Image (cartoon, rainbow, N blue to C red; front, side):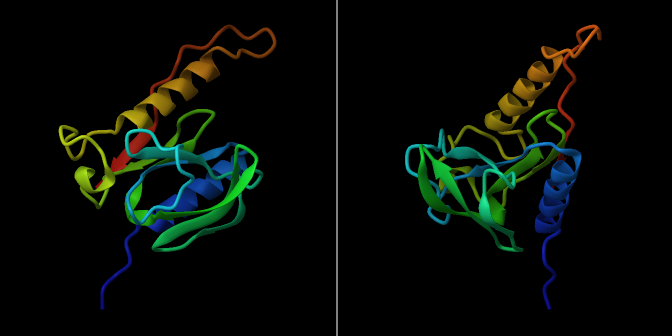
Length: 157
């Protein structure tokens, strides 16, 4: 009897934490033949998706796939993301979440061959940096501006 990976459970836990805290859960994923996303939205074989309840319909985070309905450019689409392709799940507002080593090769997903396994994909670093910068630039009231915080993503093997 084989055991199910902890990855879908961790994704569900981070998603639930984001929603409970009022944050926007994002998932970064590799796009391959098993992934169904609207054409033209992936960049360098990767895509970041908003999984908030307001942005999705019929969201299911199962042990093998994440499935949901979402609008892109006003057009409804059914999306399917294999759990194996998920690179990270995190809160847009502060970058806190978890990153994963992928279970598929970069070439299978259309990622450049020179990207080494175990490295944080650029899209995850870019989104975490953007979230930290946005938070630092948005002081509220009389508070002094905050310094950007480093991302709190943890890479899980």
